[in-house]
Image (cartoon, rainbow over all chains, first blue to last red; front, side, top):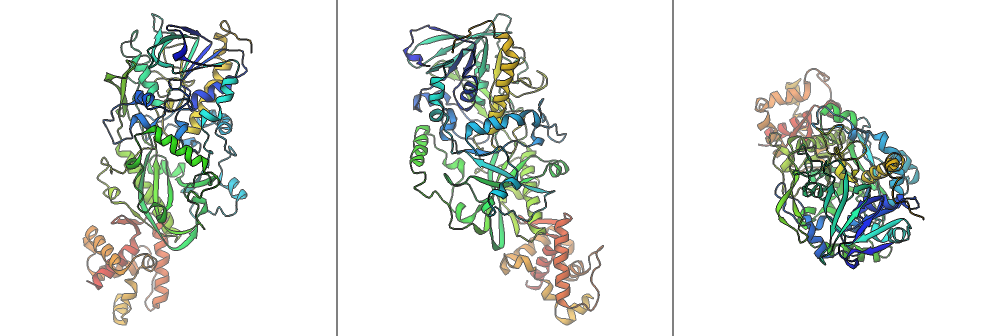
Length: 525
Length: 112
């Protein structure tokens, strides 16, 4: 069922068992998982079914640290969320990403890779990729042209990626959500405050508003925030009526540890002779099903005490005269979504860059590096409020010396390997060469618009905001879904892992927290 | 040994990093050689460089009288060993084996 909150009588009260705040990738995935359960699920979306500039403006905020993308256009505020301009890159986190590493401060999750692994299969299905097997040898059997470079497997490995169509959650799953008898979707329902009992131990309700001036209340036994890393932190911080520092923020951790991947051109790779590099060829829209990036092995990372990261081989003919992503990322989210829609219409008719052959000999290396958790990299509230009266979120993205050292070390390792195997030679970009300069960054460096870590998962409230089940410490019924829970950022794009984590949370709520739900709004489906 | 190479006029052959020459022109190799010598000024004398290229400890792999082709082959092998044993140097961003960086340096001295 769907209701537009602008059409409800003012000051309506909506009641359900579970309230999911945000109908983006995580929120929709969780709602899908609750269809045909005997529970009434309230799914709140701030925007409508189409991306609108006035809704995007609610995400506007200042970026006061390392250069970043416009906050009002990098995430999409409508049904389907940021999947509306997602490119579809999918790869799981690696086991090392969850481990405590003594050379990476604040590393280590309270759960490990094996805890998340069973949920990747469910994640795979919703993003419509072929397999949850990301092993290179598996894919080589499907296509003999996927030939690896002869590099030492103890040093570098082929980290595989698959590509979602990409699945636009807003269109792909709209009918499923609307027909889900126990799913009650409310659009134009922006949460502006999360309200607890007097003891600040249980969330009683959330207050929602829309730009038409209407205000409603949503009551539920359990609340799941799935608004993206910046907005999740923003809502906790802004909900300060009963908790002056914001909910879950007794230890000033909400909003801290904001992370993204550093994405930047780092080296040139010169080979004397052309080689078939289909395995590594850059993603081509509507064509590439699978490809690999060069990644440092876990043992090598430990030996060199560096972060996880990968490098893509970008043929010079592809990168030539191509500006950096951060120089071209548009501030107009509506136009971006329209561009993707136009591309979608041309699928199967247009060549979006598939080469005649995959023989290349000169490349730039495009590195995607994990960012070390940094408490000073953070989201904070601004004094300025948005049109609904909620303080805007400002971003202070900060990088650390280990981030740059790790990027440099990855280039050296690739340089050693291509040298040893007589494939070619690496030349690092100028900004990486001086080993004494580890805190300055080129203007071409951007993130992957992968917002992570602002309500990080930890063993205890002294180290993080949510526990191993994504429940906010100190609150009995408030959960965070999505990449805001990530304790570290890994090397891979977050979508697949945030979905796996969301399905893990969903399973937890069904099997454990459900005991607390059984006394309330059971619906007849 | 070094004198033998000098006298035979084949020292120039050793000043040519074979693999790198497939990727770089003479100007770049000279530039790399000069940059390496700035990093390692103690190696600026050509006899020191030639000695390092031909008979660097602990791999005294060359014997007097070996022909140039064999020596070149041994140098290529050593370059691979350099990469294998992290015996590398970053010169102007290039990740090079120490041996081939010295060859560049020798080239820059011979062509200065």
